[in-house]
Length: 63
Length: 145
Image 1 (cartoon, rainbow over the protein chains, first blue to last red):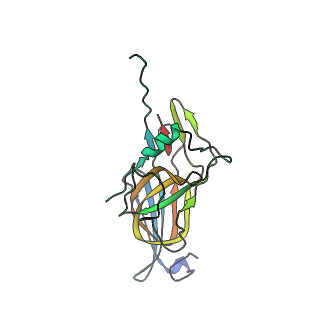
Image 2: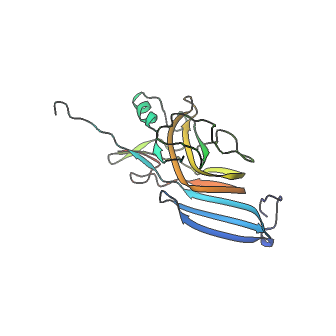
Image 3: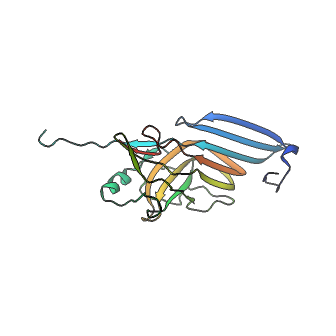
């Protein structure tokens, strides 16, 4: 059973679509959808975040 | 407008003022808020704002609290910090496209920390899971080199 826009539904009765892609930052993204006929009733997404870096600049005294 | 991945410039200055404490248990509470693809959160963002934040079923304004079980550390010459668990928004419906998460310090006037983008998404009666990268000098969520 999965949560859907129509309440809990038996996922075996729904059409399942899955996909993977790369985010604009190079991270991995996986999604899964369940369709009841023409209705999208569930979509979940897992994304691997990418980090950010800052540089510390130290000046040399008297340099 | 667009969201841009970055460490917030204000956060850089606040580090030098000892405004943020990211240590575990005794440290500050860090939260994660989602922003619409039409928003503009970036290096210039100084604090959390509900403007252009996502809204929808089971999403609370301000987002969720980040699990912080690993204190900042160093790896070689790089300081690193990564939340110790995925950031999860459970059974939400977010029908307007969003593409960014803002980490901010809810213990310190909601001061902004960083913005992470991932491409436009929607969620339908489902779960959004933001999985953390490896906490090392090349991949940690926050790195100071």
